Length: 510
Image (cartoon, rainbow, N blue to C red; front, side, top):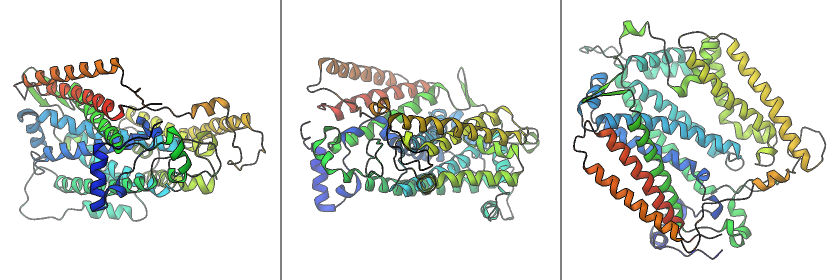
């Protein structure tokens, strides 16, 4: 492949670097093999966080902690674009949690937590914990019957946490009895609103640290069966100079793919939030919040149902005593945080390839399957205890995972190269030829010069953008037409992402 010439953006950034020293130490050029969306899942998470910050600030303009339910209802029913804004912020939170889980699952599967990225994985799991905390706090703020019942139930369950964590939680949620306060609203709502912003700031700080470590290490090399090979692209200077798939690309492409992921994320949230308004009913000329306000009397008759990302934790408390459930939850979290060290020092795997990590893959698959089973089971049994059978089923899931995944991956290794049957899992280095072929790098490419078909698709895309934009300007009632406006905006974002993708990859060649 020809040496990529620097674009105008590269020249501008290089000029800045000579004077500020920032460019060369913040964003690195990515190799050609990395221009696939699965390498940029973290960018989707970043985009969803930015989306939540923007929409959250707008929602906060109308939110009154002293009267949370009324202010939420007012935003939805009376503010132009208010219902769309509430739906966007709510679905955006779901998107961030979901994308974070997908991102962590992908990094587990490809072994992106291995040396020297152990700390980056640990920081990422802290980020996941903060994200769940932020979602928990945000879920409570509308002060509807379901959300606040689940919130207070969760607080009661967390009082069983060991190691002094229950005292910490109690201290952070203990409210002084101040004179002159007369309100039917739990004053804890105001505390949660403050915590919602504090945790959001912590997410931004931890996210910055996570990105800094990522830029220091660079993109992970393609999967390999090699024993003890380096996981830093800087250690492959010969490939970076001579292998077309490793050739470092202009930063224009890096910025382009980041913009693409952001537009795709924003567009998807706009489409979902507009097509399925979050807890909002549209009846002719009336838009209203369908969730009832919290009431202690009704709460006593309402089964506490946490949001979907906490159902797997709720499952433990439905199966065993709260004290034991708290221990299981902490053990689950500890294994997740320390997984890189378990992989390296307990299982002693020496290759990032999934086939070469049978014990880690078996353990990870057990976690993933039990997460899904526990969540579905808890959702289907609201307000009812499950009993010890829940934990027993989890045990069976992990046992079956090790009895199936582990020997299957060992068999795939033995198909390529014979070896001893010792538990040194890093010794078997061969892969079946089919698996070897699966490691070939495929990237998003466009031929040089760009074909007539691509040029026509660009013109068609520009025409669609012009049409949808013109249609957006015909919508004059920002209260009744807001969800149609959201759908059109979402379509436009996807169309723009295609144009950015075409521009950033124009001139690429195999």
